[in-house]
Image (cartoon, rainbow, N blue to C red; front, side, top):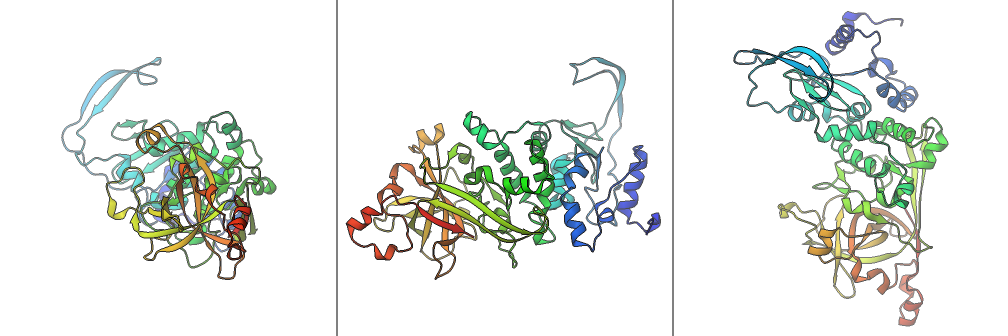
Length: 476
């Protein structure tokens, strides 16, 4: 096929052609036309190059209000009530602080009391509930939103709209500004210099926003962020087209340079859903469906300083590394692991909450002394039965001034909550949640970690021999 007749296009595509011509631009890229739809190989290859397409575009045209392709871009606008008034004034750059641009006219009109601006017409629009669109929007330098009542302009510095409203403060805009303009550094160098502003913190915020969106195809959970991953690798000074570079730095949605942060995501306000087909290891947020979040205490965390502590991830992918199907993956840990008792009936307040009924955190207890150790949040809901869980020590966090003063804590031990992979598994686990232990309890120093042959170690002197023994496990 050499061409597609204009009259065969959907209304949204026709409107996009019209908008492109009126903007004086020559070329238009539409994903569903430029990617061979029945070729999985072409789709995987093109999905990995999304960063280049959107980042280099002059402008991205967004059918923000359209629920389907038959609705188009140009929605009928609600008529503005009242009269319009023209007011002459002198126009200057940078909101009155720059050079004089000459005379202009401002048109004042009555704004509807129901006006919600970008929050309603962009953030809650049908288009921006889609996972793929989050990446397209973040990568684009400029976006024209054809919304329900008016057109919005979004770039790295502001939101502007047809009615003259300009906003330079907005959560989505701040994330976009940081991603597009902020210089980021690898976690290792930032941490050494005492500056936690790194690719990890930015990435965690991206994951939090992205996981609030939905995907038509469950297996797109990781591919729909491939473009952002490539862009971040480039910002960090790597060659994103080099497959070996990607493998060395990235694993199933996490950065290898700070796995001790990346694996400690948690369910956001409720339980996550496990898809019917395997798509990622249990320690990756991509394994489950639903929004996740990262607590701010992770930015002040460090892995245990003991020389025996280690952690690395191995991922085997079929096809392109960022967009292909994960065949097998595991997290190799050499860490302290101990048993704790999880009680779903014992709610545990973490910080300040006004919704106790929906509080997801539950208390952890020492099996021998029944002393409360801390809290945990399970990935797939609280459950109904008391159970024994394995707690792997991943990192330690320094407390904030608030925590030190009002909660009387000198720090926390951040844990991955694990369950055995199978009844006959030897040192093989799966992740089921995360939690925290009060560092003042010294729990990991009091008793023996979980060992494969733990049932054989009964005498006190033999227990002492195994004290502080690091355990080598794999988490799948």
